[in-house]
Amino acid sequence: MLVLARRINQSIMIGDDIEIVIVDIKGDQVKIGVQAPKNVSVHRTEVYQEIQDENKQAAKTEILPQQLKELGTKFQKKKNP
Image 1: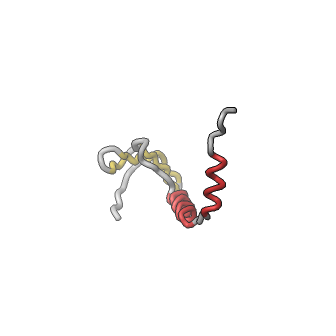
Image 2: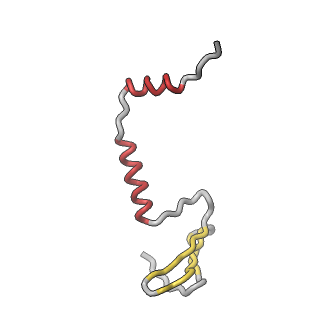
Image 3: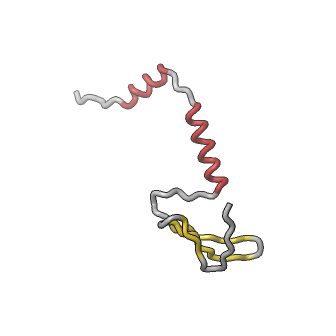
């Protein structure tokens, strides 16, 4: 792990297009700003972990062939009379 000391309004670059800015420091809390391209997801670690857990759970969900058939009939376009 790389550890860097920064002051308010100083920043750290990750690659060419992600900038981490120290916005405020109060007591034991540091507020940071993240400037990144829109195609880069930025999450707090606990939120990221929840997303990963949900994705793993969704991948485990088993859909039975009969359930697929029922879903298919619901999405079929109705023909005009």
